[in-house]
Length: 313
Ligand code: RIB
Image (cartoon, rainbow, N blue to C red):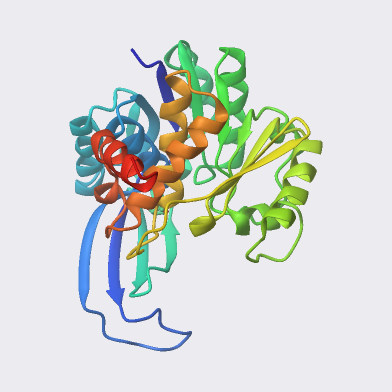
């Protein structure tokens, strides 16, 4: 049986408008599709772990509203343990306003709501819940001191700590946090920002140089997610690139979350990092062929068929 993955993170209700393109500042355009669905980077990763066949358990906060109830129920139904999801009586749930263009790209505004109320004390008090986890999966949609506390507790209980530094932080991440991280999984924009550079698309060489800098600041292993180029794994003096299967993307929202979920599932099953990167690439590639966030997450069986087809077997 796979070992437990604890996700400490955010839950947002995603309100999604799809249009030919994303409007520029001051512009109003007419879209063609609207839907809402449970999202949030933490919940998306928890959902992905469970849907891909892992043992997921989530620590986070929702508001006392219909969105909160719906998000809790959605995770429960996929098989994620939700006993440590707190309902904050005087707060709304987190929401995300998402614009998706027909070329698959998106832009997002988040209003954190209850996600801002997950405190370092909550995480410390949940040490028993984290104990026994093989992995603790973190993102940056909760307050930074809470993320640092979660990494510290994860370390203390002997779990591997994975940090997806998303969304890209407005200020540099403290070295104290990077030193608590076993695997850092930025996308190319986040990697550039963490290294103090302008956000941009990176080639494998640039990604490798940035990953080396982040490792020098404390992160043991860095996996740079390179979108349709796959990912670059950088550990102890060596870098290995893994190409992504070629697909027609319709919506890239949450592809990074599905990648992290797939990575965690593979590692919790005892796979090595190279195998986990290949599996995570396949999960993320399949997710971008569908609209939405959690509803776009493939099942384990779908990923296995897809990966076999992509490798020509
Ligand atoms: O990574 C995608 C997620 O970012 C969305 O589900 C949205 O809620 C934002 O948190």
